[in-house]
Amino acid sequence: MSFFVYRALTPDQRRIRLVHLLPQRSDSPGENSNEPLSQEAELHQDSKVSCTLSHASLDQPPDYRALSYTWGDPNDVGSITVDGDSFQVRKSLEIALRQLMCDQPLTLWIDALCIDQDDEIEKTEQVRQMEQIYRRANSVITWLGPGTKESDAVMHWIQRHGALIEDEGLREFLRDVSSRLTPGVSESDDVIVAVREFFKRPYWSRVWVVQELAHAKAVEFVCGKENVSEEVLHHALRLLRNFADYQYIKEAHQPRSISSNAAVASFSTRNAISLLKIRRAAGPFPLIHLIRTLKFCRATDPRDKIFALLSFASDAVALDLSPDYQKTINEVYVKATASLIRHGYFDILTLSETRKKVPNLPSWVPDF
Image (cartoon, rainbow, N blue to C red; front, side):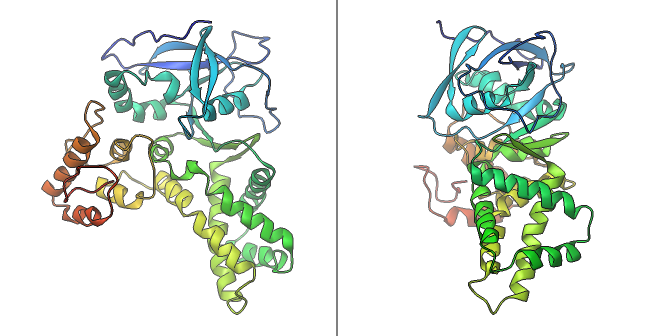
């Protein structure tokens, strides 16, 4: 089998590529499924992931969904078929695509496939369009990773409690939950420990998530074969945060009670809460605010610590900052810092006091 070679996009014409994920058994190859993902979808362990690529106009695109996920270990690779040719991808993407396979073709925008990652010029052009790519998608599928027994339990917990809290007052609901989740019930501790681990998954600290969620019309969170809506997740996160506070006050004299575990679980949700707050806020925000709020976020390419925030920064144009992958990490960081200082954001200098991993940065430039 030959290896896939990209066909160049027409430059400067707002063109994008779309992935058409083929079903395991295609009974209706001409139809395109954009229905909600089934919670009963089965993981096709032995099936080869196959898809095709097409070019489309961003001004008049067909229906599609955008995939938000974590790239994962660059050394952990898998293989899929694109237009009949072999295409090497990160294992995390192969697993996600295999899970998302259904009985109908599914049209997606996926950064690792729809952008030629070896073409820095194309990559720059496409990243500059990513705000519109996510805005024009019917919805964003947020892939949190493969399912486990523990993550399935957490997704069920989120679905059950997040949905219930919409129908009850928070104070009354917390009292009810507190009466059932007592320190003597081991299952309570098990669930809360699982919640803590669930929200420590790499997805919640990925910097590109900010843009992908902020510009989405609708978001669906998928982990393995389970899924929950954004609204349900939002309420479940509110519950976790408030339940920890409630338990601390009620059971402060019991240091080894569930309250301590609940507090730890609540602390582990802060990244997810920050991301959803930005999505649900009126925004956009000044770049300096995004840098400070999202300093916990990580990126495979350090330049993305700046580039991923620009489409949601209210002052990106005034700061004269835009994605450019032909610039080095040092050049990107120096320009961003200098631009912020010129516009009076001198507090950016306080971030330069932390230890730096990027070599040869000037002393006044933060390692973002």
